[in-house]
Length: 392
Image 1: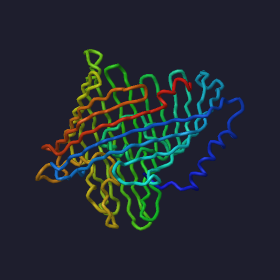
Image 2: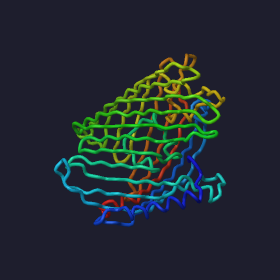
Image 3: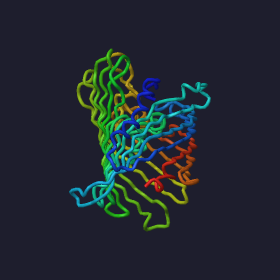
Image 4: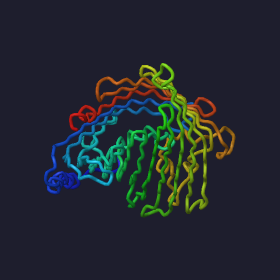
């Protein structure tokens, strides 16, 4: 949650759908639009084996409801430079995230988190290329690229489910690309200026081969009380082989990724630190049952995690959004010595009904030895999947 919702903000945001009605071109098809997403997550984390060095033992049990209402306008385009005549779909949506952390004792008023408010445009640029632009406060699910957990941890995806900024996506039959900016903090008292520029792309030359990249530049800057800027850049090219077309399996994939980071605490350190490593992932899937083994070998991708800024505040998860297990630490060795991290995921992920998915999973982490695991049960419902064909 990035900030409280005030009555003044809520009232102001309700004016936006009305403004769209006034500004819509003549002849456009206007429709009332709505969406509803919900998710539940039970995550029992037992990390005492590592002395809670990477992440504390805890149990997460929460339910989120994310309703949205708004206006959809469909307009026809004149022939463009591609010689293609298509349509553009404009949406302005207003919604909210309501989260119940079971057992927390939170009152109903405290469950209302961040408002979502965004404009989106879907446009067919040519017969083989479509564009989608989203601006405002919107769900991370709008980003459909796959990022390693070295970039974003699963707990962050659940507890910070929205992007505040802009996202552009371009899709072709065998490739897709996205570029976005997420403004995480406005400078203030006790609040740093923070923003992230992120991008990802992938191409599929053949059904058994995919390749691509992902990366971000995270700017972690001053607050009104504390000066100091940290630059955090992470780039990862990758390649994936999926042999499922040749065997009686739903998935048999091998992927290789190189992770390169560039980090600089401008005031306290001055020089760049450039940890890097390689990540290998193997996945086997049949009848919705999967086994995924991830191996990372390299240096600690979070070298400033336990460092403090000029005000005495620990950087920690404010500077790093990835899974803390990528802080590889070989026993008895210096922090910058390469080490191995292994993660094994076993999960069953059936589609219960259109729009409704369930996941039952067990995770095991190893940093030289067994260092913790978790048991996960999750449900996810998305009304848009039920309505997408009807809306078009």
